[in-house]
Length: 141
Image (cartoon, rainbow, N blue to C red; front, side, top):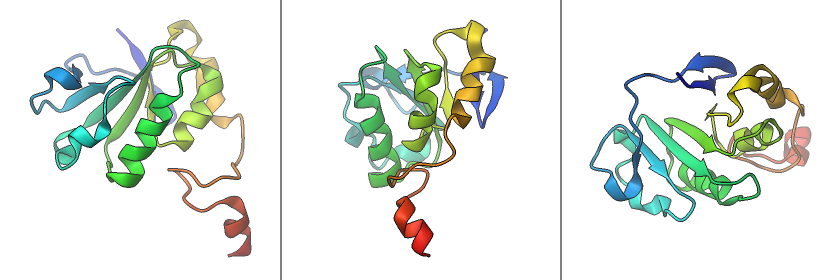
């Protein structure tokens, strides 16, 4: 059984959850996007999806961050956005800033430690999916 971090808690991934690669997707409630997949292919059909997983083949590959921001900011996806693959504690805060709200951590034995990674920083300077105004605008308000 795989465990995921969702809403800052460790929970079991649903047994019946099925994530279908975009090339094979036929309207199932879960889709898996690879780093070469174009999220625009889901435009107009996002309301059918309860979860979109974005694969990180290696921790140095940042294309998943861009896909997440596009889904949240350009296409308005409101459902669960999950990072899967090489997802490490050091990335969780930044992934959450881009719109991810659940994570399948690669080292399942270190989930408690990974969960703490979401609190490594108290705030960010830049605008992001989770806080659309940069820090200087929030201070001025």
